[in-house]
Length: 559
Image 1 (cartoon, rainbow, N blue to C red):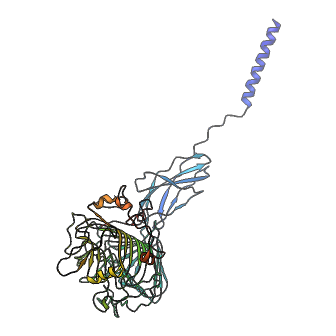
Image 2: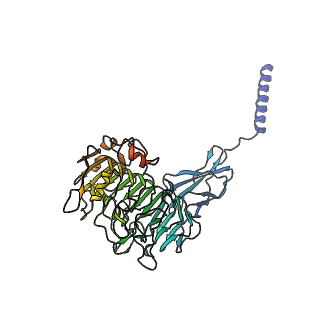
């Protein structure tokens, strides 16, 4: 009995000791509160491209996570910053655009809930009126819209530099607003595919018309085949628009600057009845000038017009001009490769603007009219090179004009070298070789048309009617292939209402223009091409296995 008593006593003592030990140990720590979402989140527009997001600090946070979504609805949020503290500045935004923001707190691997979203609309781009001629070196920056008010001239040897992504508008309410780069001055306008330089109308989208403003005019020191004076068309119509004489140039290597990734829209103001400015006028411009990746869109007169000179160009796009897409004359001898002309509608002109009755895809002349030094044979002869061109006329649903709708109008003693082209959907004819002086250029060997595909046209060569001389070429000898194939079958995407994403000039699978090009240039073609134009095994402006070079910077709006 004594042994059992002592055992019970020992057990009681042990239990008491254990209880005492438990009572004197550290208490169990409670779970910490979860990291709170930041409070008082606010977003403020600080410019047309930036917004500042502020918020209260969160206890225990070592940093923050900021998300942004486009629009006020706040869908599809994505992280745009991980600031250590408030405030955070978001950049690279679009002007007058709504964005939504929300913020979470971060502590190591822990991330709080996001705050409620807040919305901000960025500021409008400030508008800088341009009312005076530019006589000293000047830069137009991309943080402003530059508003041309009147016939603005860069002169006195000045250089106008325009930053990538800059927008320049021609003031609708100041008649004839336009930009002239005069002889001896330069323009340095180098955009990029992602940030093109845009010349456009001051009218809001949806209300823009062909001829809303003047256009871009470059006058160089190149050689023309007219005697002085030669007044630039569209000038000399008023005291505010004095005559510009571009005769007397002596240097075909002259440098008037650079246009690269530039878009010019809704230009061609009618300074007087039947006297319109072109979208891009190149008067006596020399070969030292750089032109590539330029679009002329919805102008009232010609998209691109060369008056003499020797400037070269690559990657040109013309969309829906009121007159010709490409127009060269007066001794122009430059070279051009990779050109697209696309007409799917007649433009609506700004009143009292008048549409041309003879719009063509390409209209090249020798010399005609006043001051030609030797009539249509005036020297220097117009001997350009056009390679890899795609000329597409209006669909059959659009009413033909009275005397136009010809893909290539070669006339008045012009020569030149035309290779690897596509001419399609021209209701009257694909090619017109007009006038005996033009046919004489074929005999002389300085008018060559080779490796051209012609389809969906009224006739391959315009037939002779009346006394106007019309010529033809042997299609087999000159590799001029013709067919009834519709334009829509030649390309990957040629919709009736094109957009930047649906229009695809890549030759379609099985398209005949994927082949048939002149890949090796020899003889006179090689001499003319120099190192600027290269032969291709395909025809048209786009390599079937190459880059879609027109995408990302061109536009196909109609108003």
